[in-house]
Image (cartoon, rainbow, N blue to C red; front, side, top):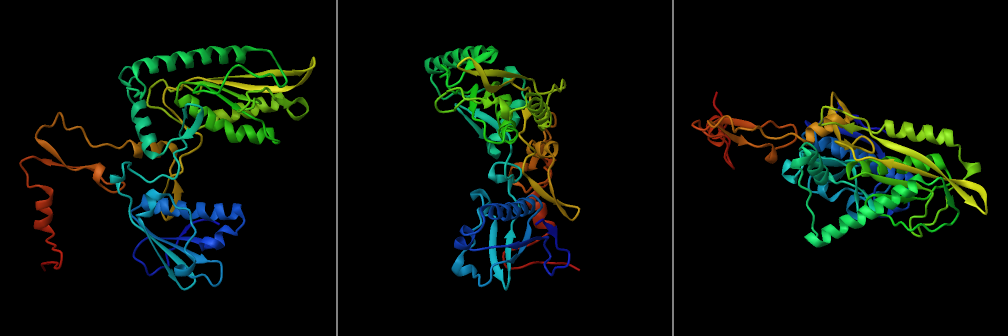
Length: 389
């Protein structure tokens, strides 16, 4: 199931065909969870693309017979920030979603489903929402001496927190350098801003590929840190992965490849790569080698590391496309021009109160203001439109 632009339509707006979809609150709850998630993802991509492209209409064929919008509801999981931009209606066996253009007054310049920028928040690896991502990117453009990291703790509490994290860092570094661990050994090291424990799943390679990008993005975007695969996150006990189930050479290559593929965006001129060190710590049980803990040390990154390309979409050249990382970042960072060197100019239309891809409007301070020009050249009242021939 993919999105396509419907060019054979009677609507003047851009129409995105989302294919077939099951609708209704109860009906969608009874669906196969993977299919339900896939259909929802397709609809959200279409919504996001039209929000970023001046608005339009999503057309979907209703798959379940007997569906009635008024009785059954919709059942789609739409982010709250998008809902005010949508109107819906049923037209026979099709469901139409009317999408208004995104408005930058929402606080960010474009609609995004997921930034895929992660950071460490105490003991959690959390994805940044759009506003957090924008603040983070702006912070990264500043020189280190100008970065102002807010801290809600008082001076004494903040100093104690820094000392606590410093002690954990020392313990984590010591653990990282150990050659041998004991099975079910309880580590005197809790999870923290700089330490994360992850248990291996049955599929070791899939586990690493699923969790590692988020961990690396979070540590690189915060203060750096350590992730230990094979340590229980609640009991802090060493479990490891059994030696029969792990190929160290293959796993090392998989980890190296995974990290090298992570999207990064540079604001600096040095453009370094992500710096990390990988160790395999032996896990012994009653004197015999039982398995391994995979330990990765990630350095703080100069700019921005993404777990994957941001999930943000637009309609361009009659197709729905995902914005590349660089384009998404540039769009997020668009700002009004600096008029400090042009005192005779004033900003008449700001990007902060416009639709996506709008341009700022500057006029001479002695010129007729933009609103007056609009009234003169395009005289429109609430009930009457004037036109000249």
